[in-house]
Structures are given as C-alpha cells and as structure tokens.
Image (tube, rainbow, N blue to C red):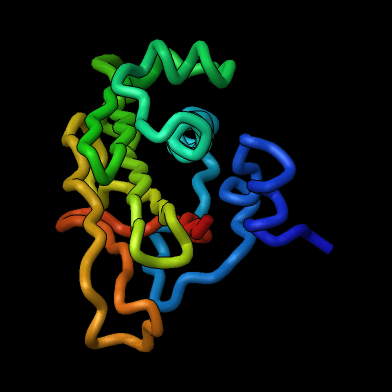
Length: 176
C-alpha cells in the first residue's frame, strides 16, 4: 500500500507522492494527471522540492528563501536543464516557477508554479499547492491564491486555488 502524501512529506523533503499520484483532488481535469514525459516529470519533481524547501526553511527560520541558488544549495535539489527557474517571495507566500527553457522541446512542455502560503491565524500554519499551465510553452503560470472559502465545505474558511489558465497537480495540497 502506498503511503499518504502527508507521511511521505514528513519522511523526506522529496515529495515523491506527487509523482506517484497519491491523494485526491475533486474535479481534477485529465490533463492535470501525473506526467509521463521524463522532462515534464523532472520539472514536477523540481517544483515540488523547491516548494517543500521553502516550507521547511520557513519553519526553521521564519522567512522564505528568495533565490533559486540558495534553495538548490540548501536542499540539494538538482534542476533539469530543460527548464528555467525563478522564485518570488512576499511576507506571506513563496512562489517557485519552473518554465520550459528555449529549445526543441519548449512547445511540448508545460510550466509549473508551486506556492507555500502562511496561514498564521489557523492550524495548519503553512499550506502549499502546485499548479501546471494548461498550455505548453514558456508562459509563466498565474500565481495560485489563498482565498476565503465560502462556496465550498471548508471549516477553516480558507483554501488555495490555481490561477487562470492552470490546474492543480493531483495530490499537491499539503497542510503543515
């Protein structure tokens, strides 16, 4: 039996459960399933590790890392050369972008964004999500958002959702 996503995250920083598709997301479109293309799979692994690194770093240091090289060095992340990487931080969130690099495969690969949000007045304290662009190419995904949840069953009153033109990657929401 496969471990739950939460168990996998707690055991290691590598969110291997994302790649195995453990977990559930209601209404997930078919194109948001776990990728089979090796380059796309490597990109998903990179964004999940970057996002997990941000969450872990914040828990230990009270701030997010602002540069890709620091995240890569701190957490030993190997970043595939078929993609470009960027990080954007605010006082309440960190966004990790993985976008296809210029090359022969650029039109066949989709970009990702992973986000770690602080929810200080709630338990959990940090909520994460990964979103994939619906359209392949070098288009930066719209930022995911932490929004008040009034239209869904949500006892904490908050939820995360992907931005326009992107879909949530199966099993990507982690609450810590």
